[in-house]
Amino acid sequence: MNKNADDPPGQRKAPATAETISQYLSLAIHEHRLAPGTKLGEDDIGEIFHVSRTVVRAALQSLAHGKLVDIHRNRGAFVAQPTLREAQEVFEARELLEPRTARSAAARATPEDIDLLQRHIAEEHAALAAGDQGRALRLSGQFHIDISRIADQSTIAGFVETLIARSSLIIALYWRRESALCESFAHHALVDAMAQQDGEQAEGLMRSHIVDLHSALDLREKAAPPRSLRDALQPWG
Amino acid sequence: MNKNADDPPGQRKAPATAETISQYLSLAIHEHRLAPGTKLGEDDIGEIFHVSRTVVRAALQSLAHGKLVDIHRNRGAFVAQPTLREAQEVFEARELLEPRTARSAAARATPEDIDLLQRHIAEEHAALAAGDQGRALRLSGQFHIDISRIADQSTIAGFVETLIARSSLIIALYWRRESALCESFAHHALVDAMAQQDGEQAEGLMRSHIVDLHSALDLREKAAPPRSLRDALQPWG
DNA sequence: TGTGCCGGTATTGTATACAAAACCGAGGTG
DNA sequence: CACCTCGGTTTTGTATACAATACCGGCACA
Image (cartoon, rainbow over all chains, first blue to last red; front, side, top):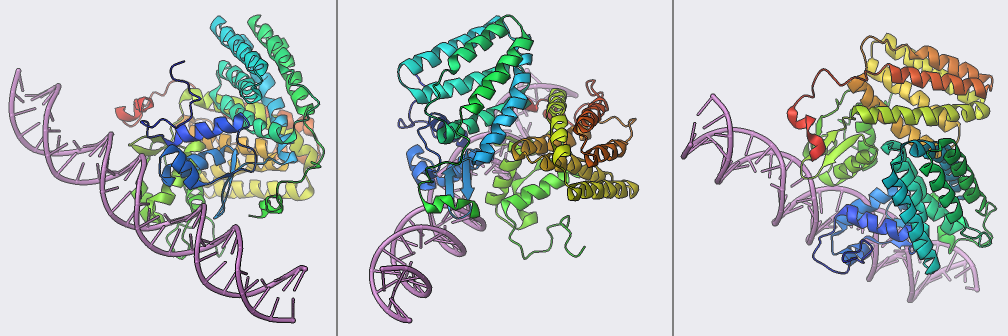
């Protein structure tokens, strides 16, 4: 634990590349420390990481490609605010991609892979027990990404990764309080199926798990309006 | 035909944004006028479009995100050369995404949509008849993109779009001469199924169409080595 | 002949300077 | 009081300057 990847960039000595910065911002978004709609000023970020705006811009453009931030010309970059419609689409895409991926993963998973997944679940539990919901949420997403990595289809894994990232924003916006974060059970069952190389079962479990997540979103138009009228009309930018 | 989108950027008057440039390069790649492995020098491109390297870099980074170009640090940007493995993955992903998409599209297609698709097929035929294989290939890809647009799932449509783009590179590298470009028939049958709102049929046709494409690739290790040893070992970058 | 070193040259990476556009608040006007 | 206008301020967009690295030729040497 000497060098924790979650360390703030405060300590100098590393010049910080664009990739570093985008990963760091991405992490903050995943952990819900950067709320949707937050403005990401180039000067601010550059000051934090001690780099020029050139590098920051590259990082922001990278994030914009993954739809984690929206860039409005001459206005700047903001943490994305997926619409209800986009939210639907993201989960529909996940329903299409992930079950099949889980099946492949089950067929290919080595004991080490199973180990890794179980460690992740344990970490997730620990984070949840410690009350660190952000971290738990991120690890829960990481679990899905790991599965698609195990499936050994990097192309689809890349798609899944962007979908998970967007899901994090969607959860920030549309998650219903009532439904508890009881996913860990589903994850555990999934690992069991994979440990037994039962692809059929894994596929089914993954499908219902994602359907569960999907149905835990509040699909109705938000009662609470966006933080400002300007934001409400941003699509015009 | 006054203003053709395919016009070279020679005529000044428009300052050319990063998006313009990336679209233009993307088009050239789709039409096989830029071969895989071609170096894309920043100064060269900047000179062609009369912009500074700043915007060129943004365009190249954008293309790199879609895996159309590879950027090697301190070495520059090159038109991507998908490996055989990546080629497999891309077509497997297409087999997963597009049939389902075709089904949705069939359910939603309006008469105008059918019209658009038929016009595209006609254009494709015309280009083929005129011997412009590059253009025909691009239009054939556009056909697939249009279908995913009709399905009205922009997220999946985005994935399909990047897969089509990469397919263009894959075809450039691994297409077997022997197999003719007889896809038009498959496209025609697809439109017919969609015109009748027959989703089941459309899904099946799309699946077998993609399988056909996939099997028309040369899956064996290339007999012809890459243009240079340096390129052959680039993954080390 | 082939290999390794080494300098100049070309190209990319980053920071900075300047231009252009959006933001914001004060003041004027109906 | 609402609305519009206008100037200063802030922030982004683009070009350029400089630093760092890779490329490529010749030359020495085994």
